[in-house]
Image (cartoon, rainbow, N blue to C red; front, side, top):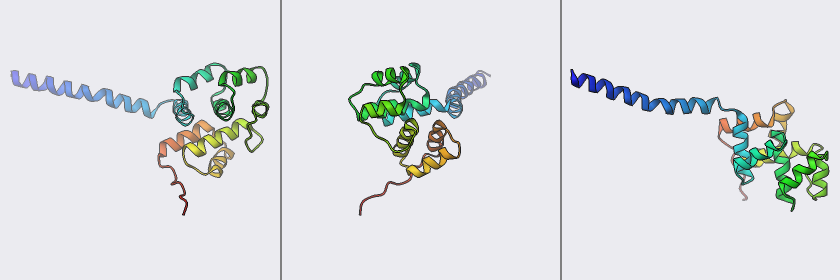
Length: 158
């Protein structure tokens, strides 16, 4: 009887030890896609997720964060200076021009996202543009690439 009780207790403990893993997996499956977007942005721009979230908390929309970081990366301007200029009413294009940062296209924040997603996930720019043209948000495009996982192989020079 004692052996049966001990075995039942051991089985119960083993089953409970698996619960947190299953719970963590289900949380990851249902995780807010913007969290994955922050992770991708922080990885691509070589900054911390906390820094990316801080930019958002300073009033910059989630999908405008790459605009801040591309201008900062390609110029001597700090992210805070760029954020302040945008909050003062300047457009992303005007801020980029002032800092001698040029991207193709009319909408600077969109182009910043297209470049980020294309380079980070090793996908052709045209593919990212096509997904955006069909109405996908940049957060959703990032999520799709992360979910599928396999990036297209990069072309090698012959």
